[in-house]
Image (cartoon, rainbow, N blue to C red):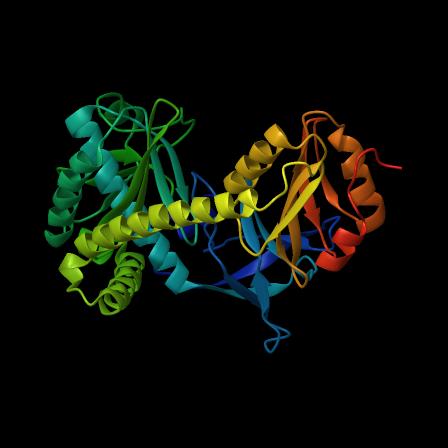
Length: 396
């Protein structure tokens, strides 16, 4: 096992290796877990997802097997595959270097930021997740986006310095005198990752050799989380891809708003204000239209059913409430069309609206509910069929 640990922890550039199958376990879901006498695949550990890649049996070089997952339990590393291999089979393995290097960029960038947070604010990194799309860091104290922007600049200065990333296993005596970050109590040999002047941390994962290989680090988000904060970061290629995507979005918005990229925030604010003015104007016109419609309903009419092509829910409810004040029967408003169906609200101050809802459900398949005074729902039927139902009180 010592050879295995040394192989995947230290020699991060060794992506091709030879090994022998020690055991193969058939799982209940039809997949297999293969145990090798040595491996270059890093297992899921410490918040970081496992390496990917493939292994190929020497007797069947044309049929490589994808590594679906890699786990470590009780110091034994299990390689999950879709097919099994008998014990004693000699295999060659190939780690997906692109994914490995991407993860190394993200993880080493995390060390720089977490080290600076600890140095300047004394906060501990109490959670870390490194997946294929997102990287999150949890700290046990509050940091603002403005504070993180300052730290972000400091991290990128450290990246530009191209500092060495040092890996060592201190003796127990050395470890007792060493100040280092660690989220958990560690039994046995402690692997220390040090970036001189920035971070000293116990960590098991692969890292880049020099900080310059990180490329850059960008803080993309921060939110309060369990009494502290959760921070989103992107490093290297991921950060560049994120910038490119956002630049494309900004360019598209800039063209649509006829505004320079640096002015689109102001342009969006003006557009939002204009939309609000238009919305208020539409509400006023809608109210005038509804008042006109209501004025044409005979006062002596007990039951009132009105149809509209497009009416929002608050306006529907207000209309029904207004009708109920002067009409003792059922007052209903339907909005929509025969193709897409109708939303409805039905109310009454004197009749049981649930009885009307039951009739709509029985005859027209309406879905909805409510109280004796008011019900609402949706149905798929033509306006003609709704009128033919003849909602009247008392109902037979």
